[in-house]
Length: 192
Image (cartoon, rainbow, N blue to C red; front, side, top):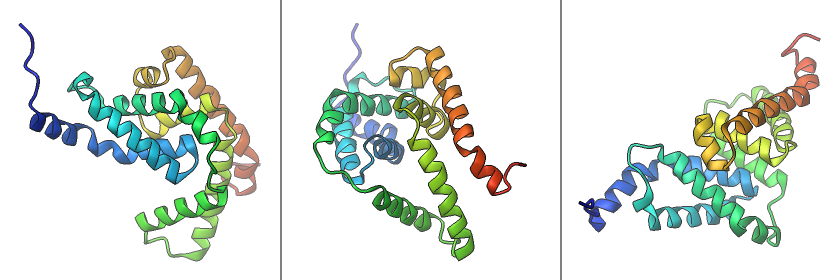
């Protein structure tokens, strides 16, 4: 006996319930992959369209965010990376300004100029250290530490064994510690 296919209305309702709450997380990952908000919007649209088209393959009860991130990474790998090389990208300072504006919009209580300058400097240091990581380490850290996926889910998204993901996360964290060590000493975050 085969399972009944959901009606179009049921599919839409399930998609809205399961997938749409994860759009912000998918967009954040898209920005990290393409480094340009406009291109990230394009990649997000491609991902959502593909997710809708193949939503009957999603298994309800599983992690929909991980499923969407898998589609995002596959879209990125399967041609988006190639086509985005030919498109002009926003400058790093433009991205910094947009991220800062979004952060301030989310945290209006941060109107103290001294705290803002200090936070902006630290954010830039962390962002620079993070961006200096090779792609495979940066992607693993984003999925595990930012998106809070399990190692198994990240393994499926990146199409790599769990042991490889654990190794990339460990090595990526170690690279970040080394890259930020002098900065942390200078600011008194860790003893000299």
